Each structure stands twice: as C-alpha cells, then as structure tokens.
Length: 263
Length: 340
Image 1 (cartoon, chains in turn green, red):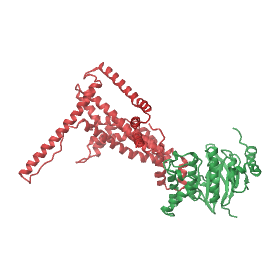
Image 2 (image 1 turned 30 degrees about the vertical axis):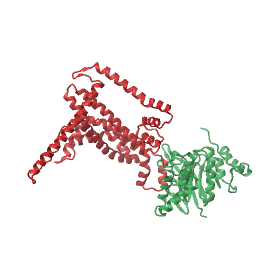
Image 3 (image 1 turned 180 degrees about the vertical axis):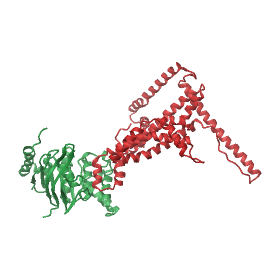
C-alpha cells in the first residue's frame, strides 16, 4: 500500500579524508497523512541528517524519499523547515519574514489582498499579531520561533519538518510553544516530522516516536506508537499511568539499551 | 520631540549634544552635567594639554625656515588663508562686473557686436583646493566601491573564484600609491586623449590612484561578509526555491551589509590618506599640491601654512569617517550593536 510519505532504505555517506563515513544506514519509515512523528536519539546520531534528507537539503547515497508517490530530491516549500535557531532574516520584520515566504510560494496563485490576509492569518495562528512589525532582534527567542513556525505554516507544506524547534528555549517558554503547537495541530492536522532530544516533548506531541540508535551507521532502533487521546493536557498527563509508562519506554531505550558511550 | 532629536543626534554621531538637549528640557540636571563633563570635559582637557605641549616643543626647534610654528602662529596662518579666499572671491566678482560693463557698452554702441565672456582664471584659494580634494577622493572612492562590491559578492559566493582572486588581491593590496602613480600617469596620458577633456589629467590620475588603493578593504570585507552568511538563511532560500538573483539581492547582500560598510569605511579612510600623496605628485590642484607648493615656496610662513593643511586633512578625514559611521548605523539592522 502506498503511504503518504515513504522514507525508503535511506543511507548516507559523507566523504572524509579517511574514506567515506556512513552517518545513517538503511532508514525505513512510512508516515500517514496528518501524523505527528518525532525522531529522538542522542546528539550526533544523525536525526538532523534524516530530516535534511527529507527536506532535500542533503542527497541520500542510497534509497530515497517518496512524498505522495513522487520522489523528492531537492528542497521545496512543500516540505517547509522550522530551524532550531529560528533562521529569521534579521533585517526584516516579523511580517516581512512571513511575507517573503508567502510571496515566493504563492506568486501568481494568490492576489495581493489574499496574500496579505494569508500572512496575517498565519501570524494570528501563532499569536504574534501584536509584534508583527518588530525586527527579530527586538523580540524574545520564543517569539522568534513562533514567527519561524508561522513562516513554515504559511508555505502550506505537505510535510512540516521541525529541527529541534524548541531546543534553544527555556523550559517555560518551551511548554508554552508546545501547547500552541498542539492547538495549531488540532486545527490544521498537518503531517509533521519533529527532531527532538526531549522525551516529554516527544511523548506529549507525537503519534509515533522513532527512536534512533547511536551513530556511526545510525538506524531506527524502535518505533513507539503513542495512543494517548487528544486533546492532551500537560497537567493531567503528568499523573497518567499510561503516559508515564510510554515515557519510561523511551527513557529505557535511550539510557539503557543505547546509552551514549562516554568518550 | 526630544526623543526624536536624541535619535537623530545618536545616528549622526553628535552624542555629546545629547546631555545638552536633556539639560535644556530639564531631565535630571545633575546627571546631565556629569555626562557632559565626561563627554566634553575630558577630551577638552586632552586637547588643551596637547596644545600646551606643542607650544613648548615647537619653540625649541629652529629650522632653516625659522622657528617651528606653535598653535598661535598656525591659527594666524589659518586666518590669512581665509582672508586670501575672500580677497580672491572679491577679485572674481569685480572681474565679472568689469567684463559685464564692457560688454554692455559694446552692445550699446553696436547691437550686432560679438561679445566675449571669458571665465575668471585667478589662482585657486585654499577652500577651492579643499573642494578639489574632496571631489577627487569622492570620485575615486565611488569607482572603487562600484568595482569592489560586485566582485566581493561574487567571490564570496564562489570558492573557486575566491581562490583565483585571493593571490591577486594579496599582491596588489600592499602597494603604495607612490608606486602606482607613475604607471597610472603614463597609462592615463596614453589612453585619456581628447581635445576637450571633461576632467584634467591630473584629476583623473589622482582619482584612479585613490581607486587602486581603496579598492581592497571593501573587496575583502564584502567577500568575507558574503561567505560567512548563516547557512540556515541560505537553506531558507533553497526551501523557498528562490532564484540565484533573488537569493543574492534578498538574502546575501542584506545580510552582508554591515561587513560591506565596515569595508567602505576603511576604504574611504585609506582613499583620503592616499589622495594627499597622489596630489603631491600628480599636481592635482588639491590639498596635497598645496602642501607641496608651500614646501617648495619655503617662505617663513610656509611651515605654518602646511600645518594648517595637515590639521585640515585630519579634521576632514575625521568628518568623512563620521559620515560613513552614520550611514553604517543607518543601514545596520541590529540597532543594538555597538559600532565604533
């Protein structure tokens, strides 16, 4: 059966002076439309590499990525990326950052008025309307990441790729943004791949957690289905037996079976 | 209103006016007077100290042109130069009046008479020379920027081109204007031939020498700025499938603007320094020629007049740098960054 997104036997090698270095090996993953998938693993295991291959920024050495029956091998707005350090253009205001994306994606498809509405709508979605005319240097890290998400959502992607989107934020801001993201997700039902190293974040947000083994030649160790009902509430879940069971599964995988060797 | 004035003062670099503005509007006067003392008082003391040392030191050295002039003699020479300027201007006005009268008289006698209007050809004054210098350096600097920025952007984007250009840049960068000048002079005399030249040859030679020497800082800074652009920003452009031109104009150039302006500022400083030497040798009628002429003249006033020129060169160079700083601040997207 043809799934929405197929990551099919993907491996990648990087040339080094000592011969090729196999960063990830034989990754197989299928994702349904509207599914929220987290990829978790120790740092350096190649999670971001997987995402960059799906995003088209890297080329797989063997295997490939098929989205809706078509192979993807170059970057495009159908796979919008939310980068870890927001990557907003510092010389553009929040609005202009989203505008740049909307104008290049919907050129000739939307009228100027429709574009403006669409930009405002996406900024509203992440609750940033009050600061839309501010420069990135004038708003907080959490707000920047909200705009980064708004920019990615505004591209109307088939798959939304998020590379440790909340990794650089403090715990409270991170929780806020996770709640916002769940809210948006309940509305839009996007297909999302999120890279993370935060166990709670992965369990709280995902339908499926992909746990990766350590590199080199990292691959998928285990896939855990998170069958918690939505909408999920952070507070209620903290006492939930099933939630804590799932959480400990991930922790056991990361810290027992695939503990990072201390160098 | 007050905040607006303060922002303008900050942008233009007149930061020491800010406590004054605040003082007038009555905002915590004690603090403002302290600020004023710090920002104006300390530099003022340093300048007075310098003038004192100059005065004492100058009195002790006697050259073949007499005693080395102290601050007061230099001030006197400055006044004379200003007076000479006004006298020369008066002469010019009178010349035109006389010519006008003569032509009127001629026309009254015979309406068909051919009248000649001759331009005034008096010697250029000190202020004319300053303007010539500023114009020359401006032209040289603009040409340099027009060459350096595009090449810098392209070589910052392409590693191949950068490694091709880098040795050439490194070899040409340290060459003194004095070495360029003979070559430029010969090439200009050979190539720039016209019966009615728009610019004099000495001007072209000086401007091109300025170009050759002030090219490099802008080129290098632009290339470094472009090549050090955040890779994620480029990736955003790739995800959006922006064309090469859009990427360059919407992402690459805006993000390297601060570095480009740093380069431009250094370039203008070098251009101004080089210009004086170039004018001395090319005999372009600017400040450099003024210094050279006074040196050759060798009167008792010459050293004083040269010192006036030296101070003028310094002050103008300082002002040019301030103007560039203001432009740099205006174009910098990170308003919190401290730019000095």
